[in-house]
Length: 116
Image 1 (cartoon, rainbow, N blue to C red):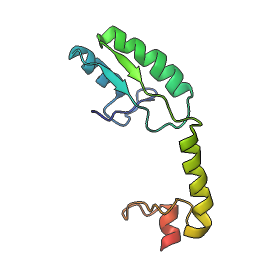
Image 2: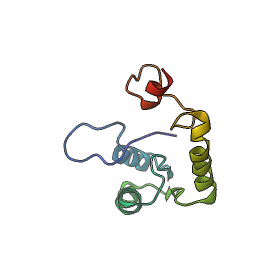
Image 3: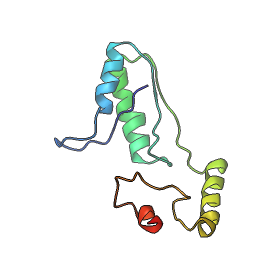
């Protein structure tokens, strides 16, 4: 698997590797792709347009034999239930992040400020 980044706008440097480059590489290697948009919990322009239309077209042009995009969780009952449990447990845990604390090196984490 490869973790890559989409939504680069303009000529500025962005997180790498770029999704476009990985799609082209997969096409050159004749490898099928399964794209999983882990950063998005709902369908929107970056999934429905960028991934489903633009990147699917790029994959066809690049010779990717199969391009599949996993759906986002949207309003799946298990996801909504998990969110509800986090909200209900917030007063008990005393944190807004469900007990998760950012890495010690990240001093701007609002959860860390609460914990310190």
